[in-house]
Length: 168
Image 1 (cartoon, rainbow, N blue to C red):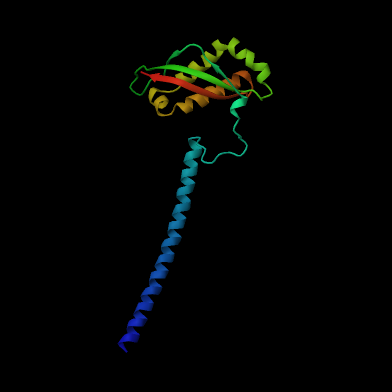
Image 2 (cartoon, one colour):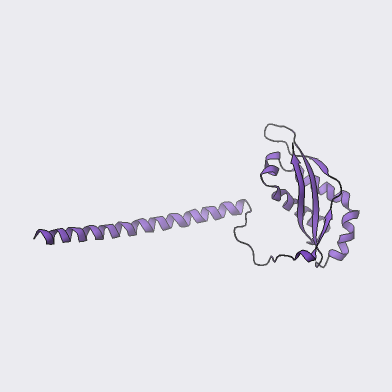
């Protein structure tokens, strides 16, 4: 009699355990979905791309032309929270796609329009603080790329390569 009563008690505890495990899993899955949605919304606000887009194919290195800005530039950065002035010493290159339909038209203009390009570079760097530039210089490079694409009205500029960046 004691053995049957013990078996029934163990069976009841097993069923309670399964039920509580199911309740716990349902609550964890709901919370996990909410957390994933929160992370997605934060990444959208920060313009972070979690997954690579399908339409961007890598350009072979043989199809790239590089124009190095000949002079090293010293640029005043945006004032920090304390109001302090900081400078960046920058050396960079413009990477262009030779297979782009606008390359033949705009490539000769790159060296001719160097002062306009330098002005866009200075404006881009001037809109970031020293801490922002040091944390992630690719944000500034992407900003410069977008500004130059807008300046030329074409997407033949594919990247900005920063060779030297010193901040003070």
